Length: 168
Image 1 (cartoon, one colour):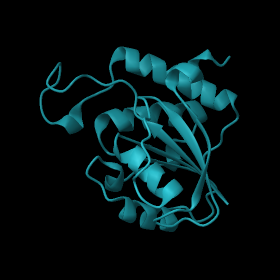
Image 2 (cartoon, one colour; image 1 turned 180 degrees about the vertical axis):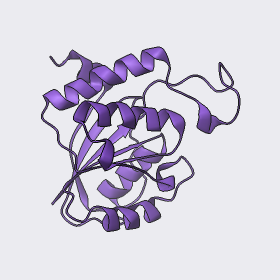
Image 3 (spheres, helix red, strand yellow; image 1 turned 120 degrees about the vertical axis):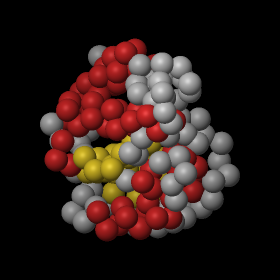
């Protein structure tokens, strides 16, 4: 059994504002960092556990993953995957997850929309036909008996950042 958590990156600067360079270099805003720290504390308070944190290499996702890894003291378990970038291939991600997760029961993926929602829909329904809106800083838990590229997961819960920050 595998518990797969999907976390969308926090609030980032808008495209073209306050940044020079590519979309990949857009950082979290100050507000985005504060909110992610609160969300990470709530995640720890919910007694979530991660054996592996896999993040998109784009700056805003890496910063989000760093905040969570810091809160959980899991810097060594944090890895980057190009397959979690917006143009990544979910089939390749699943292949890598199978290889990387040996012995890992609880895996956190940090990435972007619509990639994460499409991945979630594929794991729940077999194809990306379910309309899911994962807000910035939103988190969900999928339970998986046998990971594959297709229907293999059960949605246990999905929380918006607002719901998470209301938890004490």
